[in-house]
Length: 381
View 1 (cartoon, rainbow, N blue to C red):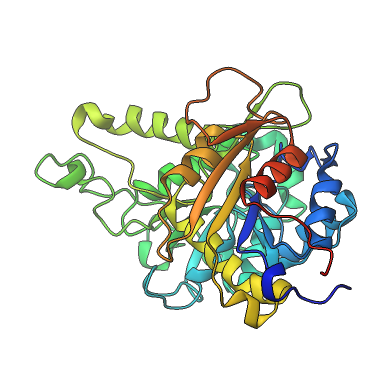
View 2: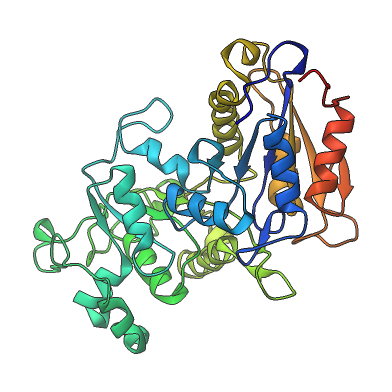
């Protein structure tokens, strides 16, 4: 392995790559993706992978990408949509009281993989929709055809749903959408039940709902748990030749049902929620901190002290990658430079959010970044 760069050879810039539509498409490496990453690694130029995807633990996803791309990667250079949720396990300045021992609902992903991710983060009491529908099949009668699937990974509930004695009933302290839900109808029903409940207790209905004297007409004003989405992407580049609906599609669907039930903005009611992932500032801030920790590993501590001046954000989605990059103001003063590729969601026309540059693929983006930085591989390095 090459030694870390030093002196004039050390790069003051770095790259941040989206994954789906930039490096891979439906888990298959896109042309010249391996070439781009291998070149950066061989010249000790730092980069991270910044994706709105998820549903697997970071080390598992990194292992899959390493094999698929033919490039050795590690978790120090990887950030997926729900990675920041790990910061909510313990008390933190950003998220407040930790949820390590709280009872949380985790939705999305295949089987109960997202539950396992949450548990690896440190959450100790994780419930999934599959657990609930298996224990109470009548809670959503139209999921009967999927019961055999849910029974394959369901666990016993920590408490029953007891409408006669709410104090003994299952209480949820937070709702997390870790990944794209597979059963939109079931997840919508359960989330709706919890948000309309008293204090997050399933089987109850808050008496404050629809009270015009209260903020938000009383909705989500009675101790209901917070609702967290891990990414807002409406579209993503899958195997099909046209973009497919992502977690943002589920979010919009839930918003529509919520508006129909509560009266929505027409009645002054909003769905109170927190959304992370690109394009939101918290995710880019998290990514920059990850880059700052990763640079000394690549460059050496001495060279990394020179600071990060520019990050080339390479993405295929104008609404998440480009918008987030353009709007992010780094607290350390580094410039984030947006590059849009045509290999994924965006394939032509006028993008909703204008990047600094539009190129065909990831290798073109790397070449553009290197040229813009005036970087050349010095022979003495």
